[in-house]
Image (cartoon, rainbow, N blue to C red; front, side, top):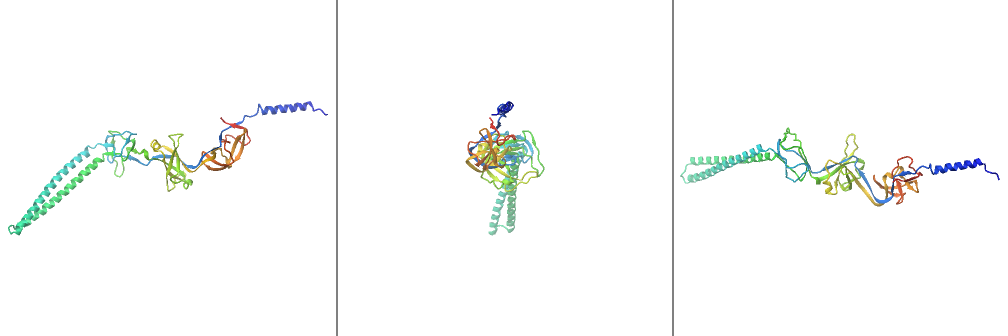
Length: 379
């Protein structure tokens, strides 16, 4: 039997050592990949607004007095609760109040003159009747009766003029009282004084005719708060009033609030350099939450179009092109193709291709994360 050359044995041994070293000492560490377990849960098909929405209030009044003048009273501070009809602002009313007193005196004078004139008219009426009776008996002359008749008519006219002056005086009093009322601003509804743009002692300057005085008070009803948000035009036919929504508010990070879609605009907004959108409105499900958020805050609305409960689901971030996903099992990655169902930005329903409990890769940070690669679950 021919002997194996010694050098060949040494070469084989060296190769085996190199292979062993590469398989042990120099073997690369398994890739650490982020994974999620396939589980059962709820999957919702939804659409969200294309740009940030805004918290608004249906009952919001920006108020200013109809007259200019000096502010003498501001009973409420910003943030305080007001009731409907509460006084919010009063201007110096010394001149309008003096006009009211003068108009009241004019009315009293007019009332007295009307009483005097109408009493004279009644007396002239009685004198004419008496004179007519005496004429019928042949005691009085026709000339005297004509004189009495003229006096009666004149007295009647005087009474009517006095009563007209009386009505005019009453109208002047009502006008003076209305002008006095213009020095006050009262709450049109119950709510919160959100803003107060003036202080006691400051002057509110009258505006030119046809130009309103800039608002100095802002009253908001917290219970009327809602979210207005733009939805892309391609989703306009899929959303409708009554659908459930999920609202997130920028000032409350990490929280979401249930609500319901209350309005879908019947037209598409075409704003230059922006996508065409449809404005939708959503109400908070909990009035206490609605009362705790500030109008003007940015918010987002996720409209839930349909829902499937108790279905196999995976994070939507695990799905690659062609509905391919990577499954981690026995220390290696394997590729699968799934049949998806409902999906949103968080979860996707898996109808075929995965079993409950398997681990799927949710992030592919490098090209090394591929089928066949050794991997382990990241901590």
